[in-house]
Image (cartoon, rainbow, N blue to C red; front, side):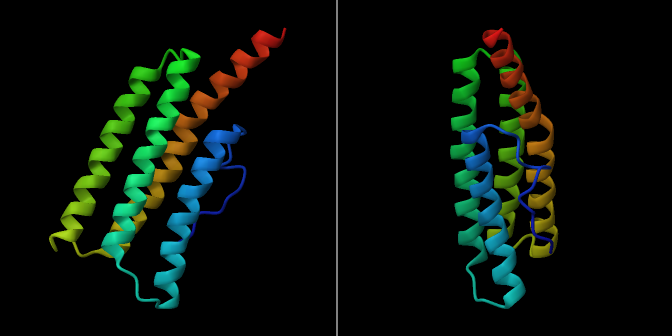
Length: 137
């Protein structure tokens, strides 16, 4: 299981978005560190906490999109819904004992976080910066 490094590949240059992403990355990394160190962790509880924070972050991010008039807000919202549903289904399967492959679940979460930040979120932040540059000129 691999940690997510907080670096330019996931740091987008928007203070609020970056702060929330960093919190998610730190939660994920703590989960990895605890498992690697053999610390007894209620994995189900940790996953639920992480999923709930991600939902809170999505709500916050979508508030920024609405306030800024982001034209791709609808598509971004659909991506959030699909990702959240996928995570919730996987966590519920894990909690029900239907999917006990922890490494696969954690690997999925890692890929999901990185891909979403580098994809949809990077596009949104780039659009915000472009709007700011237009407003300043």
